[in-house]
Image (cartoon, rainbow, N blue to C red; front, side, top):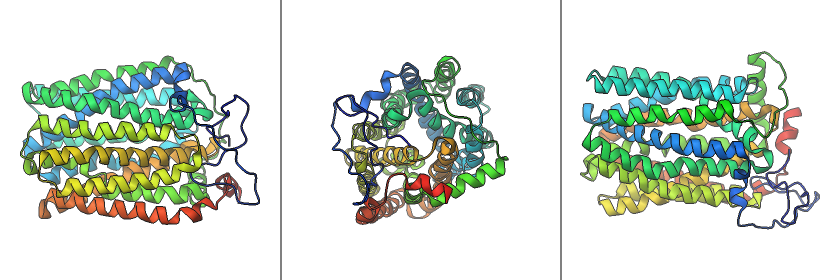
Length: 449
């Protein structure tokens, strides 16, 4: 399919560009030298629909980060247990592991904007229900777990739909910019949301954060319903849902780009991402702080995340995506090791920007590699598999890490996950010469084999 770099620096149509660290073999065509441009990272913003969606996302995710901090502190205040923190995360994310592949089949068949509007509406109702229960002093752990499951089911359909919607809003030529800018929007919100949540939780309680988040969903719902996409997908084939699901899984198993990237995303999701639900315990028990410190820890992650996302968005030569993914894994793992061994607030705040940079470098590069070299008719299903390994493995890791942290401590648990992630980055770096020997489009050709 067409590369995100649809034009050269002079405005002429470009020859097909290598994607995701794979380049043409010696017998194939020679790729032109990419011409870097300062505005390359911002190219997706030229599309009015994507621009509106970008700002709506930033606003909505500020509320989401506020809710995340408030929820973590609420569970910690009610139970004081890292195991229950992991259990809540498990309840909210496990539906993705079970349902996301079917959500991808649906995303390839229905109107993506309407699908996003429905799922975002359900998530808004979950946040408002949490706010009411806390205001009424009726909140209990069973209520938290039940609403977490409802929100998790909605998220299982929301995530692959939102990821695939980026192509309709920005077009395939500017996909890499759209993916990375969306990641930057999420983490720009992280600079504001957690800090505000820390102040609100300490002063007026957690309920206000859930209320603000529920209202903030109006922005992306409005954009999804009223903005006209700049790119229209070709209609998908009308196989039965199970046949469509089997076709998507078969493609992902055969295509080199998905076969190389998805396992690494799964491993990092399982062993590294669980540091997030552990942060409330880390802030309280290890660093001896409160909700305000927890907010600043999230802000520190957000600072690094924005840099990591924009660094990937600025890449013009797509052959550098897989090397960037490797560097991201190394930085992510190293930052988590330092964080896990830290017992000082200043050192923890210094390690978390490296964690954020590595995490978003890895995720933005992996997302771009997977979407760019996937045929349009298959993209919803492939992104649902990406969502499954990214989000679906996270609750399993969070549950395991919560249990381990109750026995050996939060810090050592985070450090072990970081060490495994670091090792994955080193392994990928050593494999780069072999990966570069693969040809662009081999993943698409594998679909027909």
